[in-house]
View 1 (spheres, rainbow, N blue to C red):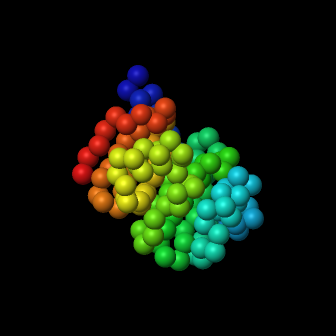
View 2: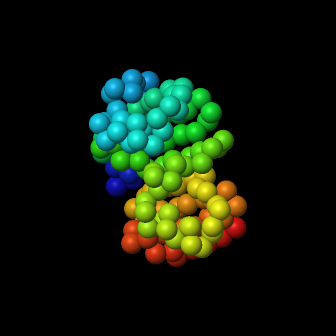
View 3: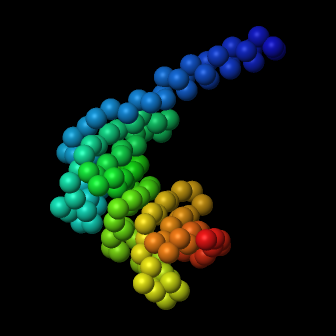
Length: 145
């Protein structure tokens, strides 16, 4: 039993090492069509510094980095998972409508600096320093400053 656990640990460490840091540069044309459409719709004119693809357990993930430091991460289908704008703000059209409406009503004048989508929902960071978490149904379940 002990040998089996050690063997499994070695195999897991080896697989993790092989999959770690496997970013490779790709062309924008190699992004899934949905990601290309998203970039053209919401970040048209933004100068792209690099595009990378990273092999994951269930496919590939893509990262687009702009010259100004903004970043967008996409899943293997081209759906955005994270939009981080360091020196600008996330375009309003890129934010789900229900979230935009809530923000306009509750925090007028604030803009989105970063939005992250995961299995629980959305995590939104505003220009006023607020961090708001929404579930998949766009209901707020946590606010912190």
